[in-house]
Image (cartoon, rainbow, N blue to C red; front, side, top):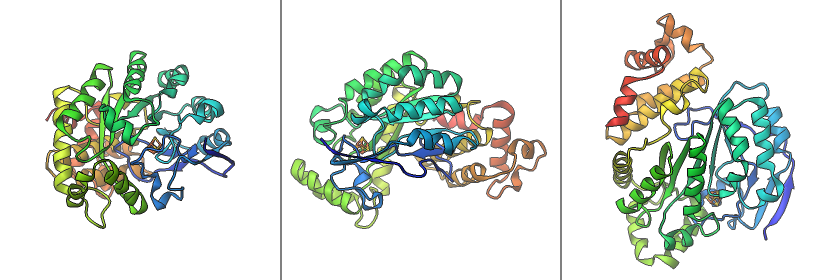
Length: 371
Ligand code: SF4
């Protein structure tokens, strides 16, 4: 049993200052610091998060989270709230007793904000009625992070999270009641869970369970977390150490470009094969969030899709951040033909913005989604 440390911080809501093309979040929070799942690859072990290397041994619970969320969101502009973060699953076993995440959801429902939940635990099923209500009044996205269906792999790397099939079952349950769900393949472990076969198995199961999207991301390895990961690799897959050294630079924390491109290609092909969108599709959040956020997320996704197919998407990503940050009324600017006054918005991107605002869609985005 971990040491439980109840805490009462002064604030919990963190406002993003860039457009998040992954989970569309505008606000983030960590209800728990530390995680009983203690996945062996978790980057919560990195020095930047100030947690113990054994991230499951001591868990800080922000017991006043519901009040802080109420205070922190009350006067804020609407936007997607990510319930739980990367250094503590909001549905780790302790949540069963403490119910802090549930109380946070009750506050968010009262304040009428949309949410994004990412978890590795089927305990989220406990709150299905509340999440359904949030989805009906606004938008609730429920995503499960799943690395592999191979028993040897998940039992080695994430043995304390709910078994992957259990997570898929809950994806199915949420999908059936109309809550948009997704599979988050994050991290994909190089040479362990990154084969076409492994990825296709996950994507096809997601499709079978009615998931609305797939999000994929590679492994990050930083400072002491990198050492910890390498130790596990040495213990369980010693033959892979050399291959890791070849794709990971000494100083960077991601695999190299060549590796990432191959991985992106495999993921893209799997999503095409099983006809499931890569990233949260526009139709899921259209009309459910602020126009400014909607436009910036579509631009971010165009940038991402261009990158994936080997074109440069940086102009779209920069434009997305500008739109996300601007305090100007973009609908008014568009009507007045002045959207290009925002730095980083040229004629071409300006036309895409205009189309989204006028029609609720972007032909260019839809075309890229089909490529
Ligand atoms: S569930 Fe997430 S936060 Fe918890 S240990 Fe695993 S990767 Fe880290």
